[in-house]
Image 1: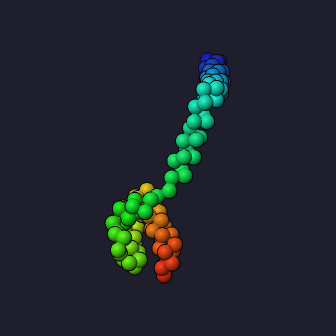
Image 2: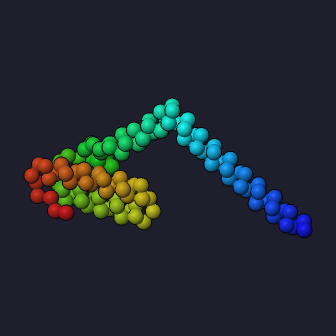
Image 3: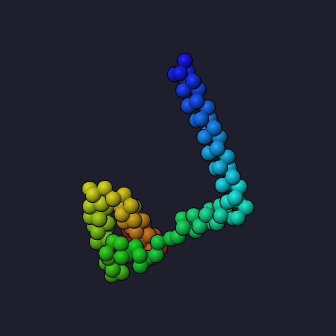
Amino acid sequence: MAAKVLAHLIVSGSVIIGRAIAQAYQQALRNASKSGVAQETIQNTVRRASKVMTEQEARQILGVTEEMPWEEIVKKYDSLFERNAQTGSFYLQSKVHRAKERLETLYHSKDQDVPS
């Protein structure tokens, strides 16, 4: 009998706590939409995502100069990409890849022969 009462109390308490959490979350969403926090967060996310890597930043990441031929840039890229693949740093690996992509567009726009 005591086990049945204890189980009933646990289930009832869980339902009450679940409803309270759901109501608190809904209220937080209403407050955020009234104050404009939600819109500001979305706008900041869009702004951050739309930032394009500059040529200077790409060259700094790869450690190359403007005078370096494309073949040397690819060698630096391969070396850095593989090194970060071994250490498990996906963030650095993606930065290296984006830097190569940025410089690749520049070399294409200069009508140079750029092998992929």
